[in-house]
Image (tube, rainbow, N blue to C red; front, side, top):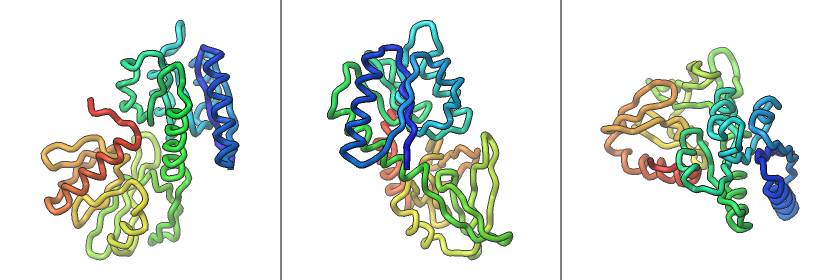
Length: 247
């Protein structure tokens, strides 16, 4: 499988260094990367950017779209790409959590930091982008991206999958089953029990306030006392994995 990678940076030497590092990483791991380079964010946005699964983005390119704004445009297209900001100034990257950035690299680039970041990027892609599951509904089998599942609830032996279908669009699919069995199948993914009735995708958590979990779908779920500690621990682990900053 090939992974399409975009390098967006107006400093040619940085792009060349990243391209070399990616090639060496691919050689060591046996992973094939196809790299495209852009020296302007506007060129990147115009070049079907949703085709890229990893994006290295310079935050501040003179006389062009700010890197943070460019990634917001990318997210608006529905892209789940792993985003890694590159900058000479760490303070510019602290709001990366707003667009789900995995990490940021400080220039000049350091090999060991790059390798660690790429390891995290590949784990994120395996978990979020290429995993599907089959839901047996009353209308037949449906294939669903696990990353699109917002949460699963159980009511009287029925499982209700709340699924993101597009920007601001969500659907519910009903199936028969046991929530514990689904939780076991998704044990290595970014899901956590919020109560005896809910299994929540941590990627869709917007906030937690006074034991209420607010989700990207607009739903708010009560966090059960029995599950609260483990849920918050898993949420913190998820945030650390993706480099989300508590700001």
